Image 1: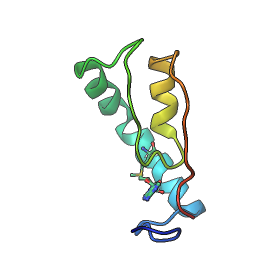
Image 2: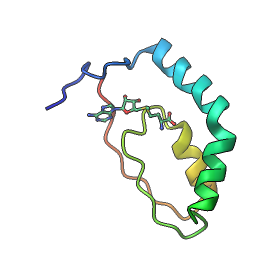
Image 3: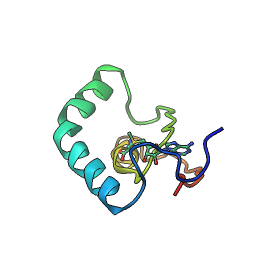
Image 4: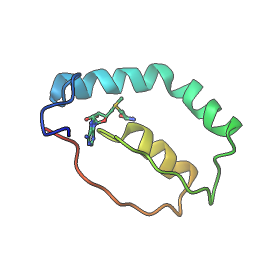
Length: 75
Ligand SMILES: C[S@@+](CC[C@H](N)C(=O)[O-])C[C@H]1O[C@@H](n2cnc3c(N)ncnc32)[C@H](O)[C@@H]1O
């Protein structure tokens, strides 16, 4: 079972920055994939391993009625 600190790509500031850059690069394709998958207002989605939540915030924009339930990422 994974424990805090086990995530191979890290959870520190440099990993958060890497995920932010990755999100900027892939965001247009991600949004298009979600649109083609039919994710829209009222959809029920589950973001597992949300990390810093860049994608989660985009999902919240698309699905404004979304509820939040979270468990923190391993440090
Ligand atoms: C590819 S990243 C996801 C990035 C995220 N979708 C975003 O938009 O920033 C995977 C994330 O899963 C988290 N993670 C890995 N193992 C986990 C675990 N056992 N429990 C919770 N989070 C985990 C990592 O911390 C990492 O931030």
